[in-house]
Image (cartoon, rainbow, N blue to C red):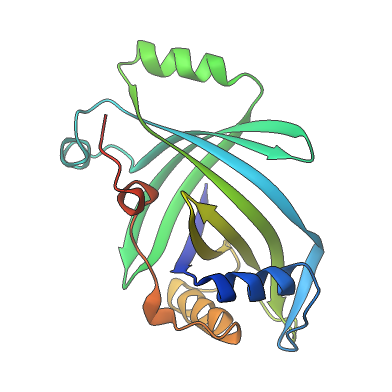
Length: 202
């Protein structure tokens, strides 16, 4: 089980290009340093499942907000993960409890979900550049920064996971982090991908 605190901001084309250059080390930001190597590209393909006919029914029944199979394509190799996530949004910042595990055969998970009465109601694909950074003083937390293309829209999504600091401190650190890139934390978008894309529950 992991706790994550997450902030997502929509970007203009010029903001996207600037962050792209920073993550690929073509432009330096003095206040930050990289952790764990280089920026990597990931294609994320997500399938979302529910036993209910609408989000309202799902919430009323106490179903986790996310029941998901994710495929991640990196360097020509694909891996799959099964995830359950309970989400809460406070002032546009997600504070989540996430349980995720690697799966070698996603077809087995699909079969189990179908037998248990679940149906796939939404799919999404994201093209992501991913890197880990921290403040130059080396103090926690470590930030997982993702520059995303989602349905033609540009986003900068940054999260911290279990890092030995409280949720309020993590939220403040996230805001400071995005401000280093010249972004206003008040532009945060707390909507789900489904809401952003205007998709309907199927």
